[in-house]
Amino acid sequence: MTASGDVAVVTGAASGIGAATARLLVGRGWRVVLADVQADPLVELARELGPAALPLRVDVAHEADVAAAADQAVSVFGRLDLMFANAGVFGAYGPIHTADLAAVDATWAIDLRGVFLSMKHAARVMRPRQHGVIVVTTSPAAVAGGVGNHAYSAAKAGVLGLMRSVAGELRPHGIRVNAVMPGPTATPMNADLAVGDVTAMDRTIELLQARTDGKRPIFAEDIAEAVAFLAGPAAEMITAHTLVVDGGFTAIPGDSRWARGDHEAGGAIFEAGRRAP
Ligand SMILES: NC(=O)c1ccc[n+]([C@@H]2O[C@H](COP(=O)([O-])OP(=O)(O)OC[C@H]3O[C@@H](n4cnc5c(N)ncnc54)[C@H](O)[C@@H]3O)[C@@H](O)[C@H]2O)c1
Picture 1: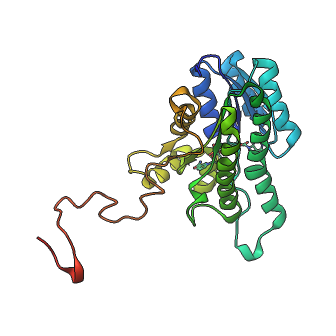
Picture 2: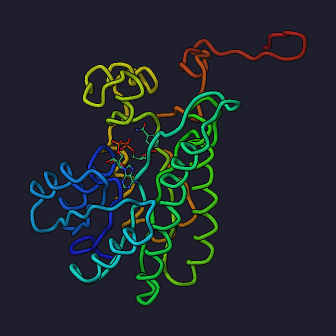
Picture 3: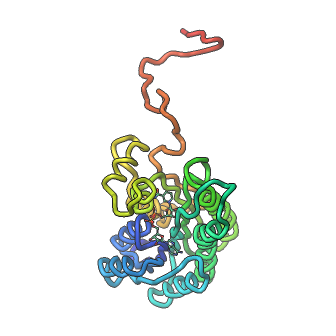
């Protein structure tokens, strides 16, 4: 697959990771259907990106909307090479014993059913060409407790199961299916969570960089690069994979001397505290 002229649908394109990915792809010669429920920022982004971008109001919880996004990619740009099923919300939160089921269902409709529908309609238009890539956005909340709320964590774990299951089905059809797992990324979603203001990016960056190496936070552009890699020819043999882009957030928890690399003196500890040599 050559990057130039390739066609993507990016859901959640109006903001954060989706917007950064749309910018990066268009910058590399892709044409992109920008799909989101937020119409105004979508139109603004489309204006910035020019004729290679097509803004489309899509609610990923609604099948007709998602079907239209896949169909528009084909009718306007000729084909669909990449479905980036990225739209998501933090959704319902609070103690499990007082959970509001309507809010939980609304969260799952976006974060899980929305990804399911994006896969369904990507597969529908990709299978006739026996070619394509689907990338979904999961979260460390899928594999670690205390990172997200319950409904969000369950949905993001569901997304991983879905990704592997659909990757198996579509592998013989030349369609790869992978996930990106962003760590805490400096986007409006996290600004809202961390500071309570979707526009408070400076304060968010300050708070988030403590969760990586302390030098900088994860930016939406870091995730966009991972998506572009998974969508491109260098990833031709990668499917059913979760690409973690988190600066070590998930795999290196805590603040031990090993997590800090602060054990230069070396040594060895054996039974009952015996030191050797
Ligand atoms: N920011 C993080 O730290 C982080 C970490 C792990 C995973 N994620 C995931 O990354 C994805 C993107 O999040 P972000 O941080 O860029 O957040 P964001 O809020 O900046 O962007 C999310 C976008 O999804 C759109 N959206 C919400 N509901 C929708 C719907 N029903 N239909 C279509 N679009 C809808 C929003 O309008 C918004 O533009 C989400 O799936 C999120 O769960 C984010």
